[in-house]
Length: 225
Image 1 (cartoon, helix red, strand yellow):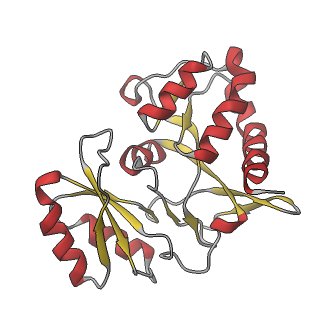
Image 2 (cartoon, rainbow, N blue to C red):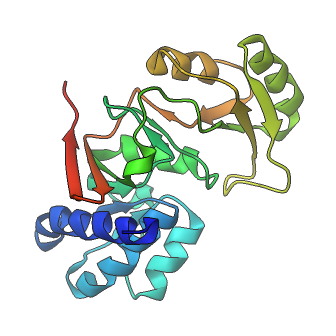
C-alpha cells in the first residue's frame, strides 16, 4: 500500500470509531491536513446524521461545508465528544508533533475541548523520540526575532516559515535540529517564552488513541494513563 492508501485506511477506521457518537447527536471535532482531509471526505457519507462539527482551520471548515456538513464555532457548543486529526510525529506515549499545516493553535484548542482525541497517521509517523520533524511554533509577529533568539539558547535552529500567516494572523517559526527527550517539560518551557502563542508539541494533552496505517492493516495504540 502506498502512503495515500494508508491514509484512506486509517480514515475509514476512524469513521467506524466516531459513528456511534455521530448517531447519538454528538458534535465532532475535525483536524487539518492531508490525513484529516481523507477523513472529511469519507465523513460526507454520514452528513445526514451529523449534528454539527467544529473545525480546527478555515481550510477544513471549507472542505466540510463543500460536502454539506455543518460547521459551528467552538464558542457555540459545549464539550466536543471526539476530535480526529493527523500528526507529523507520534511517540509510543501518543505525544505528538503537529503544525506542519500551521493550524497548531486551533488544533490544540479543539483537542483540549474534546473528551477523546483520536490521531490518525501512517506508520512513518511513529518514532522513538520526537524531533526529527521540525517543531512548529506560532509566534506574535513583533516577537519573531526575540523568540528566535530564545530558541537558539535552547539549542535548536529556529527558521522563520516565510510567506505563512496563520488563521490567527501570526507567524510560524520551525525549530530544526532539536530532539525532544522530555516533551511535556519542553512544551511548557517554549510556551513560557513571551510572544509564543503555542508550540506544536501535544504532550500535555496527547492523543488518547492512535490509529496507525501499516502494510498489515490499521493498528490501534491506546494511551496508558
